[in-house]
Image (cartoon, rainbow, N blue to C red; front, side, top):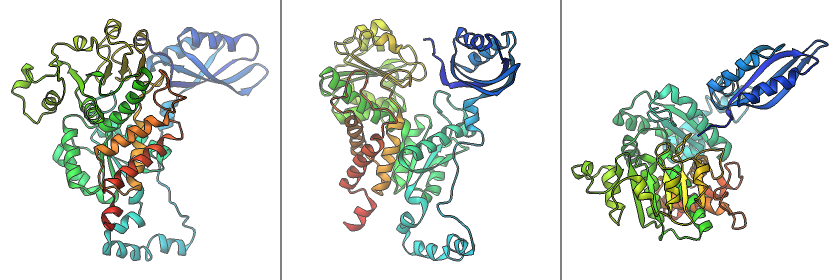
Length: 477
């Protein structure tokens, strides 16, 4: 699938051109004939003979941007100056910072913010540890923890290379939910070590967001931390994705007039995200689900599962799905299905497979940047199509969920996060799209819809309090 120019690969090029003639039109033509897009053109200096212009272009890749710059060098009369990658400029020095909430202007301020006044607050917390939520940043802080083993589509790139993603996550927590989040990139991929490190730093936080930790270790790490800690632990790659998928599916089913308990769902991908999506769909009422991985449809008689450990994720999937006993390939399973959900790899199904699905088919092809099926192709026969990309309608994006989920958990002072809270988040997110707004190209709201975070937060807060998981509920009950 051809990739369109994107702001992710945008460059600002400083150049000088002759003041008269057709140089400006020639440079825009050079960009566009190379498959790029001119998204900004600013004259920064002018003289009788020459103009200095900053041209901002969008390309489809770093190599494509280099090709465009080379093409500009060929235009007669143009002198190329500095070329700046806008994405790298945004990351210079990092994307987040710590700021004091109070000015420190004189000795009085210093003595209250720090010593000797701070000793009184420390003594108060020592006598009543729960006051840490009231008197420190703990009440509004989340640790974003990774080992860099499964970063975006980049794989195992390690903790240092993962830091830009964790900074971005922290920035989104602040932007959409007012939460102070702190990246913790751990230089170990040992499960026991990660669990012990997170347990050791947990007193300073009101929640733990696990991020980009590879399966199957992520399942064990999350389970052990939830058992050990009195604050919520949420693996966003699993549960954030699952919540958004359920919300989108809820509205897609409304569009096509089907009910969750009646549809046959076929999933491609049995990793962390796929397993979490499956569990939440089953909790929401899905009764006919089939899952396929690289070896085909998951079923208990499959050769590689016969002697597998009973507690393995694939054995759990085999035991809890596929009531009709479907076998064979993903393509065979998709035939006649109402819903396809892909969290796997590019191009695993094609146009003919989507056409063979049931009438009113729903296709969620979420592999990013290259989905399981070309969305433009899927839209020819499917009633509703969603992707993980921002250049098609119905983007399944975790930022719709994790800020609001943690805002609700922190507001409730919840000690955990459970399935009912996640179901509540999905219902709230789906309901942000009003009935008069709902259509095949709008089943999920924009990440910039200002109703999203508040709706999700309120639903999660209420579910946490109703479940008796709030610290305040536990204290007063």
